[in-house]
Length: 607
Ligand code: FBP
Image (tube, rainbow, N blue to C red; front, side):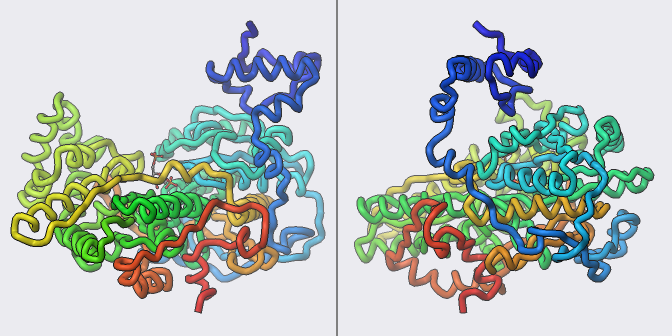
């Protein structure tokens, strides 16, 4: 048996065996051994094509050939155009004080022009940070191609397993052969991702060391609002230390909450929503065929309800809860349940004992009494606080529960006690490294089903008509995060990668790559750079105020929510389901290239 391990495959060995080096040779896991053994076997026997067919679907093989579309300005020679200086969205004085070197930088855009001069050789590092989002591999391939276009000797290094890879000096050189394997594919597996938060100067200095050792000029952080906030802190620190290492960000997250005036959408949102909409549509057809279940579907998205709203606009469910509206109207949990019971009863009166309800993942955090409870829990369980240590020292679940009950304020303690034990426990689970409650682990959809059942049985006891209610619960999140990117995400991500390369080449640091005008045909997209600090405000994290990139929640006065609100009462009572079907990669542009309804409504594309 071959001992398959990284480092055992020298180039000569590979050549003699006719082996193409696979990108993940460097960190083979035991379960891959058989796979690689097969590869060796087939390669040796000159039957590589057979092996390729075994490991790739026909779709993957064809999709690998897709050439992403990008802004016209990025095709030929490019010049940088400077815009006006910027200010942070709020808390200007505080942000300026914390980021003296990166505050107030000008906006930049890239336009056709320039002399196409070959720039000196440069090395660049890239990090995938946080939750997976479709299109990450295309950011990397765009970055790679952009760097090679600037100088064919340029090199790209990928830090492994997220930001932690920078600190622990785990990296791989991303060669053309490796990048080729991943073009237009979903996932972050080219280098892996992680949620490690870089916050200490020790970590920053270790990052500096590896950059110096590898002669890296810039680090590209592909991440969400928290990761890009960190990227800004690192950019500022390196300038403060007199280092010329640049830090550039790219807007990633399926949640769709990293958007603002300059960032129209985060990548991955389009594809993930399309995957969820396909699944929701399938469930709707099932519900409408069997006519016996209510399906409660929780949708990822962390705090913001963008994913739920987009899925509602695409599929027209009977109910879609929008957390931001619930917070605005200060609805209690019981009121939400009562509203659900109304819709269920009204449909039952028409003989329709089935339906589909979409529930945003972060709902629980927006219900006023729960919000107070979670905020108190966050402070109580904040890492490093004595109360958190005392909580962790409790051994059994019951002891932990009692500890929390005793240490919360009276009202929160009452709310905590009123919750089913399982849900209450889920609220006390570890926060993520940025201090967020891990909402994906809270089973809100089950909680609502349970409460609806209870309410219906109370109503029945009070003499109301019996309502048949049988429910199924679902949670869609991980199903969509690594899907093969839609054409929109493939193009958008590739363009972001190319833009990031230009920001590096122009010596920028403390900027996020931005691609705008995204509902127009891609050749009219605008490639640009936005200072991180422009998107920042002060927010409470881990119990104290911190500068962070502002999260974009659903705005009730924006077109997407208004379009939904205008229709939802009809959808509640009628069965007006739309079945979007799977993502299409080839076919009419109206089907294959169209992006989300959210973006189209925001950009006035529906009158
Ligand atoms: P990012 O903000 O890092 O993109 O992650 C988003 C997300 O997919 C959320 O929607 C979800 O709540 C969370 O990640 C789940 O995290 P994990 O992958 O750690 O379970």
